[in-house]
Image (cartoon, rainbow, N blue to C red; front, side):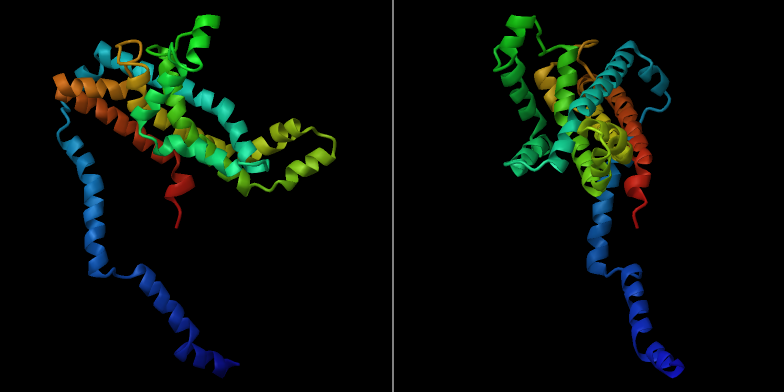
Length: 283
């Protein structure tokens, strides 16, 4: 056995194993290394340029102006409200897609993820056609309840929830599919209703997935621009969020636009830091 092991060591498996390690972790071939570095520079250079051109000396004055503070407060409020709406209706939707077999489930899943690839401006137009004063549903909301969503703060929340909720649904559905459904089945056999099993058993199991999805949805809502400006407009103090303030400042005060962009960049970095245990530590 010792001789065989020694022969294998000299001629066989372990050498191949070491070769694989060297192939995976060693030097990269030049035809792959060059475009990889170009791709890295393409993604990082704009962010570095933003930091280089930032007006650091006037930054405190720019960020403490009333217009910026209003936009920041409104952005945080609307993004949080949109995330709450996404949690209330998105988690049950994710459970339906993950746990219930029904005809057309694949089509429903595709429709749920459609806002991810739909141009945000198109999403804003679609919201106007559905929830505007003359929209399919909006006319009834106006006539029956006196509720008007377009060009209001509530309209900002609706637009942000529309584009952000798919991130939550996808994250929670993936977590539900990875969770063992036998725990729910065991709870129901012990007399718990399906809702009680979901509330007492499933929710604690999928809490990390819900948290990750909520953070992604919040970040997406905070950075939403196209659907918001189309459906809710750009009114300071009422519908002007941070991305809209950046767009407006870029036309009149580029330094203020850079300062606002840095705030959103800092939020994005904070989101990545919060999700590092889920994605960034993968080997």
